[in-house]
Amino acid sequence: MIACLIMLAAASTAAQSSATQIAQATFQPERAIADALAQWDAQFDAGVTRASVGRTMTADQEARKNRAKAAGKAELSQQLRTTGIPKMLHLIEADYIQNFSEEELREAAIFWTSPAGQAFTAAMQEAVKNGTGRIVPPAQHAAAINRYMTSATGRKESVRSGILRPVLAKEMGLFMQQAQPKIDARMRAAMSAAS
Image: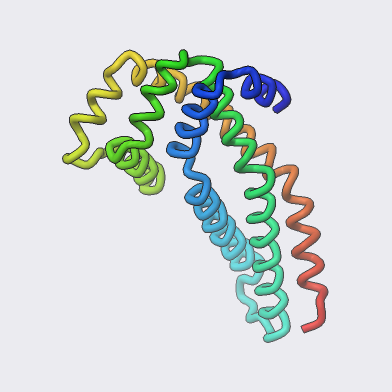
């Protein structure tokens, strides 16, 4: 993380601005938080279902479960906003600054913040959500998306993306390991609170 910050500090203002625009447009922090919280909800509910198979919860148990779920979700949201998401954004920005020229950064920022770039980002997210991995860009943006993705910068970015994605996944996993004790403590406190 320190290396990322040093790299960001050494970059020109224009390069920093472009890298920030790219990171914000492609990672979409609010969407990432919403997705992580929805996934957490689903995992929590599945865990409760597995743990309570064949048993009906009492009103007190239900209330404690609901308090724990709300507390855990609130802690995760806080940890994502203060630590997890900023770290992901810094990693993305540093990767772009390290691997792209100022002109390539400018070109990428223009694409990703354009309606075509936003549509392509949405199509990629949809491909991940539906589990197919098949990206179907909207017809009205297909030409602009194809033009960018077949440009030298687009091709270079595609290769870098294949390298960056596993790094981000690993960092998110490490973040969750570090955040989990805080989440668990907040859930325990909520469960033990008086009804």
